[in-house]
Length: 77
Image (cartoon, rainbow, N blue to C red):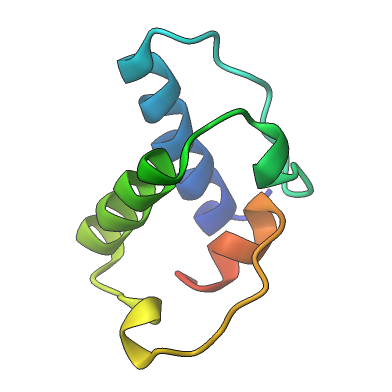
């Protein structure tokens, strides 16, 4: 995985840990909708990624097709 993919994975794993859930193995092609996280969890991940990278890709209002961990990572690369 790329450095950005690893960063996204770390943020997601932090959320699992905070919720007291078992941490899954995350790969670049992991389908985000199969992780069992709620929309609020993903919102927290986006906020954390913005803090870490200084990027807010959603501020543009563009519509993104984010299905995998890699899709999300591309926005913060």
